[in-house]
Length: 283
Ligand code: ATP
Ligand code: MG
Image (cartoon, rainbow, N blue to C red):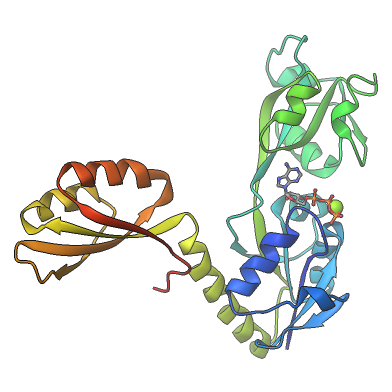
């Protein structure tokens, strides 16, 4: 039995539950407790505040945890980073009031900077020879400059909308983060085996993110052109149709390129194009 800690509520909660569910680990939400046993895989789920996940895993009170890399970097506990999970993407950046001129990193020498990530910031400043006053604030860091509490902030940015609405501009991106799977160093052989099984399922689920399955009919004469349009496709599935001179082509495409690819395929005579959801890719 393996214990895995995830966020109780917040930005990573839903996607953590979804990743586990798609990996065959069911969490019955209606009966959610602090600790829950999955009915279909030898794991227990421990629900915690994200702040507490790195320490809980470092201590071995949970064997694995799903948490933002930013929290792992800030808290500095001894955990193994086992896998990037492809969601919860954000960055921690330095931002200053947009009315102030920025002259490069030296700007921060002697300045007061509000942040919830003092350790990550101190490490960055030390590496770059900057001496600044770091003020640790939990809560709304972005209001600190307007409130006269700081000259700059060091905070999480994803879209940048919060910065703009507070009259701030991002000047340095310091740490890029996404949700990661962390583990207690030195797990037993038995626990490692379960962890590896879970990680390989996570990988299959992740490979399906942002991908679609495309099925279409094509004149056989256009097959070579179709293969050029689909550069990522190494070995397309080609099935002859009952109607002579036609075939059915099946492949996986990146969602970002989907419409462009469809338009090109139509231009060379593709018909009956189906776009299907793709759940997992097991290699
Ligand atoms: P908890 O109550 O568990 O302590 P929290 O309020 O500290 O939650 P959330 O706001 O739910 O944390 O964010 C959890 C994680 O989501 C962050 O640590 C970060 O890794 C990631 N994240 C992604 N985008 C953003 C964003 N725009 N703002 C904040 N966190 C983000
Ligand atoms: Mg938190």
